[in-house]
Image 1: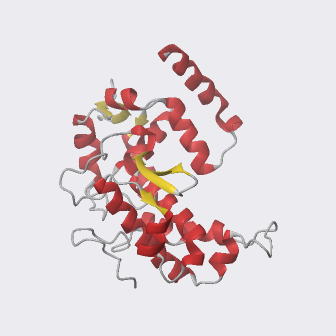
Image 2 (image 1 turned 45 degrees about the horizontal axis):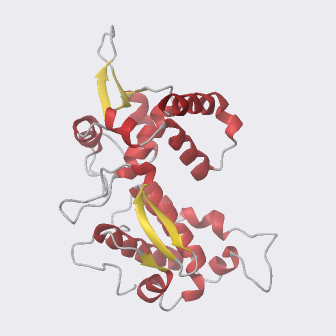
Image 3 (image 1 turned 45 degrees about the vertical axis):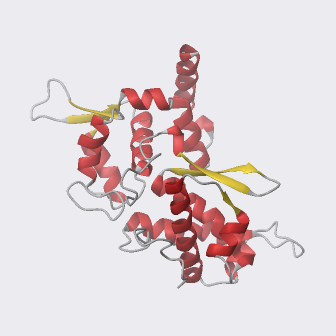
Length: 266
């Protein structure tokens, strides 16, 4: 285990108390990168060649170390360079940087709602910014909490795909598949019902309202005014295409609607 598993005393290890979401992203998320590639070159080894040279468990630990270091940099709002990442998190396994960095970036985006963006290709320098431009986690007031915007991004995507409103029961059904359940404490998101029906409603990211003329009473989630102000349906669809490598024609009507919304906004 690396000496940098916890870069600072208050930085909880994102691998601890893994639920299905964390287990997938810290472990199985690298399976695609670790699969054989027919385009591999003996002169320039592919990601899969790097991944196969270490057991998956070792790669998972390296990825957790790098994610912890990236989270620290996100808290301090500092840029980060490849040289720093190599020296602080991959000192012994520098050759494995491509696959570990790729998987760590995927985890930062999907679990924590933070994008790692290259700003200087020559110096290999990166900045960490909120996914979709959402500012809720841009500054963590207590300096200790894990970023939780990854869950918010997921809910906004679900609402978009559902035609601008998602029944509460459907939302929890989808989240439960990922180990995020109402009333059950999550190691990263805390109590998710509190986030979805209270915190993010008060912050203006979500609307949580009763469906009219329903007996017994049912509720649904919609985008809130702050979500509309900070991002757009088009950005959500671009995000979905990027993380799922989907064909735009698979939801062409949504793409057309998003374009229309963008034009109206302009």
